[in-house]
Image (tube, rainbow, N blue to C red; front, side):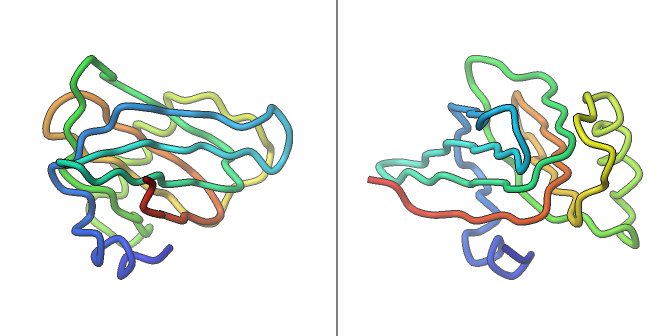
Length: 121
């Protein structure tokens, strides 16, 4: 998923994050975030995850925005600093750095190869 696709979802601004699911402990690793707003529900799956860091996860987690952060972005240093606090489970570096910015609660840095979002019933 590109930044444009995240934009089509409104960057998930004001959606609530209520689940974090990890796939099997084998390459390629997956991480899925479950979100909702009103009666809508979405799942965002990050594939080819090589490193992740979750900070401040609480009982209420309101997303400010989910973005792909390229190295040229002024916010890259902050996202990288959060990611470095995570545990790297692979020697390779994945293609993308995604960051879940928080209004309240969880902030998440995810190094991955691809991102897909889908509406869930």
